[in-house]
Structure formats: structure tokens, C-alpha cells
Image (cartoon, rainbow, N blue to C red; front, side, top):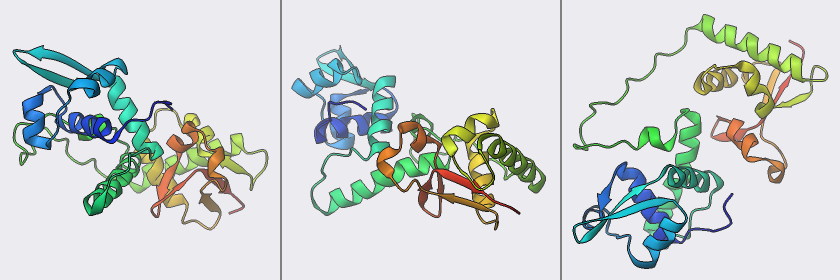
Length: 225
């Protein structure tokens, strides 16, 4: 986690550049978002390597760097959103707090949902929704999860962190694992809960969590069927 917290104008600039998903001039930034990246703000974002800026004619053009995208995702996930005043700020903060939960639940990254576009109303280029898994596939994945749990648990009925379990599932897409875990949690011999001491969670623990019932959960328990 970076020790240099971003100010509200700096954070807003990263959000605007992420939504743009490409290069944009100061004039265009002002027209679309009511902000500019200039002066000390531009110099600091450039020094932090979060934004690339260069001159085209008499004005600056900006683009979010890969490091900037990673920093934005990190701050959103950690809840490091600068104070946003007023009712509009409350709405924005609620949406920004929801965004990382949506990304984790849908197995996406910021770069997946913020794409360049010419026509905001056009859906061209958007990937079709993936077909739901067949029951047989879910059952097979459930068996793999149970086998991975058995490999990690010192005994049946022990708690196992999802951060330890996920690597044993190989290249199974995160979304499919989440779906299988959500289904398993309804079974009488399975329990998935949040870590009671949230301060002990590492970034890896949080990344491995699964959202069930609007709650991020990190520990798996499997007892006797």
C-alpha cells in the first residue's frame, strides 16, 4: 500500500482517466468532467508515475499508466477514497465502495469495464455474457474444492483460508470458483465465513475472498456430510 495518499483532485483525475480509457486533452477533460490536470497536480501525478502527460500544440494530453490503474484499484479496494462533501459526495462514495465488490464478484478488473468508446450508447465490442455452468461442471468443481480442502485441513472440520485453497484449483476461472463456493455454502456440511479479525487480513486474503450475501468471506469449513 502506498504511503502517499492521494488528494481528492488527484483521485478524481485518476477516475476520469480510467473512465476515458485512453488519451485525453485538458480541454476535453474539462468539457466531460469539469476538471483539468495541470500545475502541481500534473507534476505530482507524473512523478508518482500514475499519469503520463505530454504537450500537443499548446495544451497537455494525459493518459492513465498501468501503475495508475493498479493504484486506483488498490485504493478502491482498501477504501482509501478521499472525503467527498455533500449529498453528491455520499452517492459517489457509495458507488465507489460498491465498485471493487462488483469487480471481485464478476471476476473483472478496472481495465475490463473501462473501455474506449465513441458512442456511449453503443454495445459494439462488448463481450457477450458467459453461459452458466452446467450442473455436472459445478459438481466436478465442488469435488475439486473438497479435495483441495482435505489436502490443506489438518483434520475435518478445520478452518482453511480461501487464499490457500484457490491456488490448488489451478487455472479454474475465479468466477466459476466463486459460483461453486456460493452453491456449496448452502449445504449442511459447509460453512464459509468472514475473518473475525479483519486487521489480520493480508491483501492476498482479501483478494481471495468471495462475496456471498453481500458479505466478503475468507474461511472455508467442511464437516461430515
